[in-house]
Image (cartoon, rainbow, N blue to C red):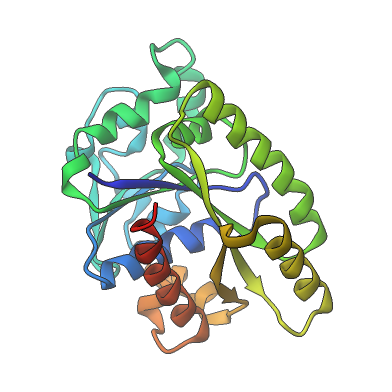
Length: 256
């Protein structure tokens, strides 16, 4: 049975897609069978995995609306060595079209159930808003991984996200829990970063992952080459940090 995790944060630009793509590739390097689900209409995770979103016959859009299934729509990331359920601009229309469908919050969960035995991990890259798409991700998942920059505004948004997760847990998905907070784009030279990091550890304890992802140019460059950062430059500090994070995730699953 696959462990299904959302990578979510209502704040934009916090490294959700970078985390989802590099964690998928990192887990694949640890011999895990991984499916990455791109739930963002921008399709950045799709492109970062080396799949051309302009050439898709089937995508997560058709899967959510029942016009296709996961086995038909999925692609393989040749560079990352994991499978991806890709997305493109079509997905923006799914919000409106799903309103009248039965079990609209659980369309993704039902679709993923068909391939549950084929993977060890399923990672869902959510859009930066609490939309019907994010709700589908949260309803399908066993847990949430929250990438966070160590700055003041990030703390403000975190309380909103935690409240959202509590509501989904209470009303739609009792399996849902916070797996952990991942500190990303971390700059140890900034006093504020260190202060916020210490606050997170104080308030959330062992929910804060030991792995810390540093601010790293090579991670930012990798998507333009259609490959995860851990493959693009395995020796870079960012890549090494994501590999360590993948190992920590595998370890954490045993206590999950």
